Structure formats: structure tokens, C-alpha cells
Amino acid sequence: MASAELIKRLEDTIENIPDFPIPGIQFKDISPIFLDPKLYEDVITDLAAKSKGKVDAVCGIESRGYLFGIAIAVALEVPFILIRKAGKLPPPVISEKYDLEYGSAIIETREGQIKPGQRVLIHDDLLATGGTTEAAAKLVEKQGATVSQFSFLIGLKGLNGDEKLKKFGAEVYHILEY
Image 1: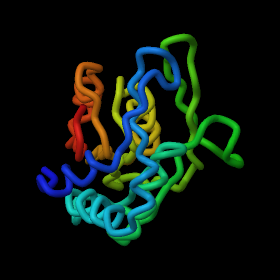
Image 2: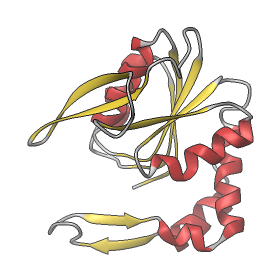
Image 3: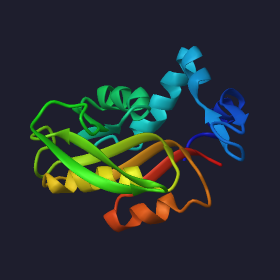
């Protein structure tokens, strides 16, 4: 659990944008965090502390999962592996299709970058329904590795993302919950 002070600083910094990108959505704009290097550093310290000694690699989900994921990997001194939308990485790739509210999508990672037996942290900025994160976990497992942790800056209550990820038997951590 993050300190009360870090949670307060983040809540005071993250902007709530009503009705974006569509009416009824309360968008949580995390970009002001990057205007405060000390706050960003404290977020990385908190996220990395939860994974110290527990992971061999960090996977970040395109694109906002890279904003913190790379720094977490550097802090842990482990490799960082990109998970991208289909067609963005050169072959050979491993792909995973998943369902969206209207249609489907595919994410990919480069074949051979995730090693069999590795304990992997999957990081993204926000956990909502968990569909993309679930697909990322399946990509990790397809390559013989284990998802040992999921981390997020924000978890949204009531969308059951945490529930969707339980089947992987991995710790789920988010600093903030809305």
C-alpha cells in the first residue's frame, strides 16, 4: 500500500476531465505527474518496491504503460519488454487477440524477448475491465514465462479488472483506486 502522503500528492496532481473522450466518462489525466520530477520518482520508488526481488522482467503495455514501466525496470535492474498493438513490431512476433466492447484487437511482443521461466511484472497506467492486461498475460504465458505481478497507477472500481486477472494467480497492485 502506498503511503497516505503519496496518495494525497497524486490525487492533488491528477486532473479529472469530465465527459472525455465521450459524455459520461471521467478521464483521469496523469500527465501533470510528469511536471513534477520528485513526484514521478516517488511513484517509481513505490511501484518498484512492490516488485523488488520478485520479478525477472517488466512488460509494459502500449503506450502509457511505458511511461512508468521502463523506469520500474531500470530501478529493478531487469529487462523491459514492449507489448504493442499489432503491426508495430518487426517479426517474429507472438500475438494475442482479445475482445473489446465493439470488436476485437490484437497485441504483440517480439518472439524470444520473454524467456521461459521468467517471473514477469506486467505494468500499465490504468486497470479498467482488464481485457488488454489479460491478453498481455496470455502473451507472457505463451512464451513459457509466469506473470508474478500486475501493477497500475490507477485501478477503477466496479469494472471487475481485478477479478479478470485473478486466474493468473499474480499479485495485483495499484496506487490509487477510483
